[in-house]
Image (tube, rainbow, N blue to C red; front, side):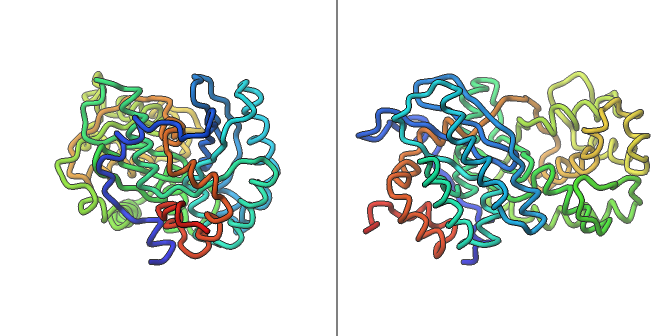
Length: 364
């Protein structure tokens, strides 16, 4: 299987969420520190502590520009060393970093170069950074959402739209791809505007361009039906929906306001209202800030497309401060690889994302 195919694999994750929630710290570890390393920064947490600390680092831009991750190594090492001290975590904890969307892209681009960078990061920080497969990230996300939402989580799956990746995660199944807010916007910029900059000026869009965007998205989301046996109901838990799409739709389609749900028909109507406007006109029409408007139309199309792909007419909206830290800290396999990081890096170069799923006990 190619790394691209592996990166997009859609796997069932039956039982994984419960395993993450009840997993215990491995013998010989006094404590654990985990690092959630996404497309826009690093957040650190530890077992036995409610404190988290974070720093912003843009990993996507250098990857998209073809420069790799070299320029991010120094700030990454600094963050891995500084964040635990700032939080007051014990100095003798086992330390593992979970590399998510941007790190999967780096692996896809150059596995050998990434392995060398991860070895240098480990030598300078004592943090074993692993590239986490999408299904595992989905399990982390669902576990975290269920923990934070409790009885408020009444749908089968959560929809988490990050900057780089999008994931739909449930207790027994998950699907994800490099279709987060910025990544999907970039695809549209390339397809419709022949532009590489993010954000680009998507608006105004013609009817033909809207059709092109919807067709492209339907193709990219085409694997959802097979990966997520229905019926699928969704709760959107991230800011691109709760702070951008949802309030804009409520403003543009007042009849849809007043609930914690978004109707697909209302999203489609809102798209129709703003597609032909300029960005400045959209600011006035929606009352949204310019920062949100830059990604608003593409985000609306993304949510509409996800509902179409899952056969849903609506989704619930519940913003939470979701991180992958609870799942990562409870992941015994990840910390087993942390103790055998050299072997992991060797396998990463040959097995790609499959390195994580292989057995650490079989290392020499």
